[in-house]
Amino acid sequence: MEDITIYSMDGCPFCIKAKSFLTEKGIEFSEIMVHPGSKEREEMKEKTGTDSLPQILIGGEPVGGYSELVNLYSTGELSEKLGLAVERPAFRLYDVIIIGGGPAGLNAALYTSRKVLKTLLISKNIGGQVADTYDIDNYLGFSQIETADLINKFDEHVEKYGVEKLIGEEVTALDLTGKIKKVTASNGNTYLSQTVIVATGKRPRPLNVPGEKELIGRGVAYCSTCDAPLFAGADVAVIGGGNSALEAVIDLNKVANKIYMVLLTPLTGDQIIQDKVKSYSKVKIYTKYDTIRVIGEQTVEGIEIKSLETGEVSRLDVEGVFIEIGLLPNSDLFIDTLATNRHGEIEIDYMCRTGVGGVFACGDVTNVPFKQVIVAAGEGAKAALAAYDYLINQR
Amino acid sequence: MAKEFLSQKGVEYTAYDVSKDRDALKEMMEISGGARSVPVISVCNEVMVGFDSGRLEQSLTCLKQSSEI
Image (tube, rainbow over all chains, first blue to last red; front, side):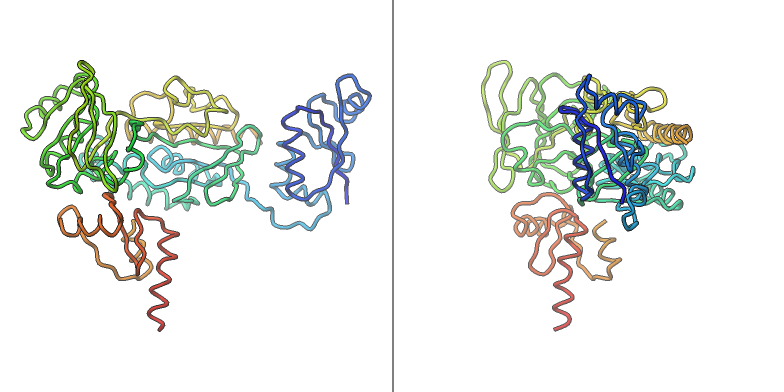
């Protein structure tokens, strides 16, 4: 069996990673510390031709650093070099892993699979935020289509090319820095890929008040299209004053008994929708009120609101609270490695590149303006083609 | 999605449209400890809020057991 030697130094993060990678795999190695100016450092430079750390030698032959090591392992070459039984590599190496199954992720999958790239799509669901609306009137070619039908069409189209999908799973950890990207899903498996396309979209912004989290799905709702029908005959509150809050009132007006709108500032949504909502007799608007608490044991029983002008606190008895105060990008997993703007959106260039080699982003999670289904889908296609370009240039 | 899943497994089920049936909504909130979101799925004595294919599949084993007896 060939020996592995690692030249390393204290405080070098990739040295630690390389060592723990080998330990994890039960592969023995010897370590040579190379402090600046030491004779070992000179020896390392001589053998490998480079001064970067770590340097890994297998049977005296330099193979590179940490990412090269992972690469060798994932292709099975490491086991071969070490004369270990060549088990099927523990991981398949994908060309592309797409995170997110909304219009951006699905269209990216369509394009990568048509380029015959080995693709894995990981997503909590199919459809993303689109699944939270009822119908779409502005997707070219479909003058009016129910979103469930549109999503089915997207999914069937992608299915035709046999994209491998992992649905119902979330990504829990990532390592995007090396040439081989590691993506760990909530099923505990780690998947390896040469490129990653981030298409994680946005999620409703929470109010962050006491009682809210505890009563989600028990009267606290973020999607009026999905949940409004469950509040037939009930008194409800809608928090927010933008277009999505106004749309929620329109959805609820069909079923609810009484609707309270609670907003910090005067209404900001489109005038045409504002006028419609103001004409409803069921609606009472509380302008310049802050929602400070959701009340209820098992289910929502009311909310507490505080006047910004007088400071007076009052209670509204409601069975439902629809929180419609905007969206947050699902970029939490990436903020350490990818550049984001002040809204938390991943910054990309015109080719959907993030600045980290082999990592692309598209759709609502990015700084690209105009959050529209067709824009997201188009961006997904761009990200896929940019990933293809990147892979071609790597070969 | 849950309905599709059950049909694929060949499991018979009764569906209640809680947006139209107030009594069913009330019952759903009672058995689930207050859930006002869909789907709520009841299999044997287990009540699940939301669709989790893994959990649902596991809970379906009780149907198999009871039919074997």
